[in-house]
Image (cartoon, rainbow, N blue to C red; front, side):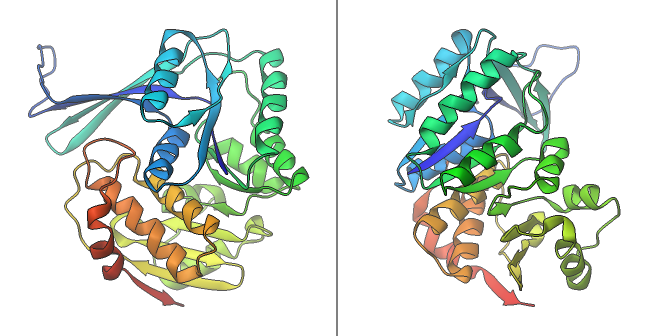
Length: 310
């Protein structure tokens, strides 16, 4: 079983308009409302890949009820921990090839709620094979929190995959307990190392070999339309992807994480794992709804991906 964790979920509202007019009324008949947050994007894609997945995290108020209802409608098993605060909204306006976002901070979590969630997490993770931990931490939660969750995963011999940034990721990198896989993009990698990292092979090899990433089996660096650079133990790979018509890139990184997780569950080779993850990421970018894929296009994209060990 795969457990996904979204500590700061949201109701994601997407509006598409031909032109965004400031200080005027903007009308649209193209909009969507989904259970959002990085971990829930991962969850929906895993569900579409027919993996056994359970979604958890924090939810509260009427919007929290909507999250649960939305997942139930898609027959996705979920066991969220109820908090006193209200789940947030996140709004994206797609206009003229651009995306303008308005993101609420979300609720503040009490220390008592944090401790109760840890027990809730341990109960769920003890029944899991892989735990995917994604996204930002809500207010009130210490930046070492993900390190604590990964320690619990280690206690139960459960594989942890981590997709986060900033202080939460730095604390994990400094800590004793490590995830199997992390997926920074090139800008996040530069920020972690405190220097600009170029996309040439030697610069990337040197960057991901930094002692900061010691004992992390997979370090996967997203390069956007230029594909992916990955380190698996002592092997390095450059993944080149075909050009595609992008409809909505939001959630493509989360979809990649779903692809990695599915491949790991099925004991894929390095090449098959990288191809599957990148294919799933591209499939998401071709869809309007975040965290959605059309598997009819899977084989075509999969066969166009080129992987070179470097």
